[in-house]
Amino acid sequence: MNIRHLGSRTLGVIAVAAIAASMIGGCKNADAAVVGDWKDSKGQIVTFKADKTISQGTGAQLVAGKWSLSDKKVTMTIETIGGKPAEQFINDQLSQIEKINPKMVTPEIRKSALEEIKGLNFTLSDDAKTMNIVATSGKTPTGAEGTLTKVEAK
Image (cartoon, rainbow, N blue to C red; front, side, top):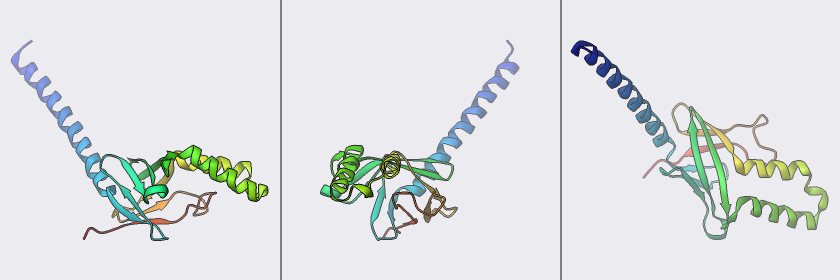
């Protein structure tokens, strides 16, 4: 192996490493656009943290989970609600509603509520100031709707 060949191979490895590093850096910059507080149409704040966790509310109303970003798609996965596993919380709430009015909780409502906690999708705007929910009708079957707006840091 001559020095000239070793040099071009080394330069190729360095080039690949530089491209990979810039792609990773680009992901971190895109993630940084999501990190912070976002307000929904009802004025509730959802906090997206740099460690890829989310939170909304406090105490018995605390919703917590994780988020991910792929291209411009932000996916929120709810893990706990009020300190309980999200699936258990949803099932408990639906069971309470069923006791009052059994016709209100259809199998479709139960299924969609449980699917929502596993992945609620938003599209991040080009200027990273809004996220719009991804749903054909503008809202999901259980009523999640609308847009999250980035809260500017004070």
